[in-house]
Length: 613
Ligand code: ADP
Ligand code: ZN
Image 1 (spheres, rainbow, N blue to C red):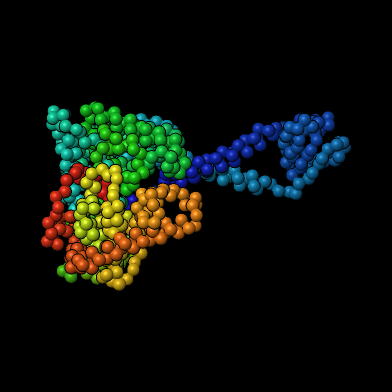
Image 2 (image 1 turned 135 degrees about the horizontal axis):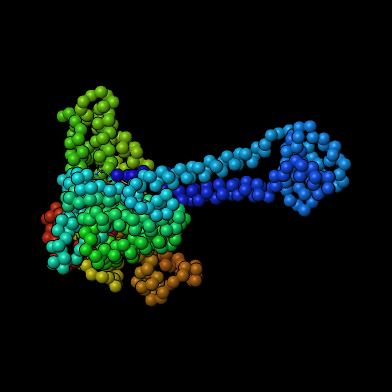
């Protein structure tokens, strides 16, 4: 689910609270200095000082009199109603001012009120927070802010099972030994097998990371702790760390259990990446987390940590070391089949009439997350309820779709049918070149038109071996492959879209390197041209010419290959439109071609390592 961030959570909230406390303190300090520096004296004493000539200034406001002694000290007093002010006039060297009759100083009162209000609000929030974080057990810090605010579910409360999670077969499979370990930790220690203590779940919001984590608890029949890492980080240094300590202490007590930490990047982003203020605090929290994980990596506690993020790239490397989050599970956007399954899971909870065509809903929801799909079903049910009808019908689904799509438009990409077709041809272009130049390009891995992040589609290829160098033919083939996306679009639609921008950027970069660093041009020779401003205009324009010539050469090569193999291009594109994701094997099967043997390497982190265009 796309959990809405709490108002002022994390950095900004810390900032606001800090600001408010400072203002409160300053205002109160003003009041206190005013009161401390001002002596309240009895009228008799004032009278005496006055006649002795000790007073330098006097300000009268009705019966209220304030003044300053000759030595600079302030005082105030109350004079009788019938006080004869002429007594003052008999003194020399005294400034005497009668203020217009006004009871109090408005600004002072206002600022006092504000100060009290702010401090009150602050204390109230703290109290509430400590109450909502549970009442048992000893907390640390004021009002127990050091207690973790993790939600705990006992085994009987966890009702989610793997069957309730549609699709995500890969992820489920990867999590099987976590369940195994939770159910039967002894077996692991006997075999000396590596215990799966920390797993990182990677995927955009709403694709079922929380659901999956809960289902693991449900399958293993163990307790489940759920917490968002952003709730660790507070304004006081040390609070986050003590919350982490508290959480793990509770987890150990309730073992076997799962600790699910959402948005781990809130504390786990690598150092120097500020999350608003409080970097010390964040680092301390992170260090505590690492310490706790190391602690039970060596202990017998049957506690498993599942953490979720959509930004694995910003995570501190220390988190990913062996014994910590050393396993990764991808939780991607659902493809066409998984979307149907998710819709089916959720539609069980509502009533629909026979006009509803789930296949049609499925096809119009490219790029929807699991949560979006759940929302569509939910919205359709609400529309039926509003209309006073028992069952949702096709029109209601149509309207529900429109609503969710509109809502999504602000956040991510929504595809029209034409976008989808153009994307299919674009990726088919990359894929076909990949297949036609097998000697120069890394083998195809898979191709998809399910949007991810800001990309509409992706063609993945697999690095066969670690590459330390590449030759001219390989580089040209890669540039041809990059060009092929746009060429395929043009071949089919006679239209140019913006989707190729990124491809061109990569291609230009490669060709620039060929010309300037690797001596792979015709007219420039084996000279390295490092910095653009260091050489003459003539050289610059020569480099330009060469870059353009090579790009054109690669473009022409790709265009010819695609034109000569138009039938294959169409087949791949149609295959993509149908199932949105094709493995390399499926592509070769579609084309009736034999897939070259690939030195299969570990597929685990293919997504991270593979080159994608
Ligand atoms: P994340 O933790 O990745 O942000 P959630 O697990 O909170 O996503 O998913 C939010 C909701 O979306 C779930 O409660 C569920 O209703 C629905 N959902 C997401 N993915 C699936 C799925 N694969 N199968 C069924 N429902 C799903
Ligand atoms: Zn592309």
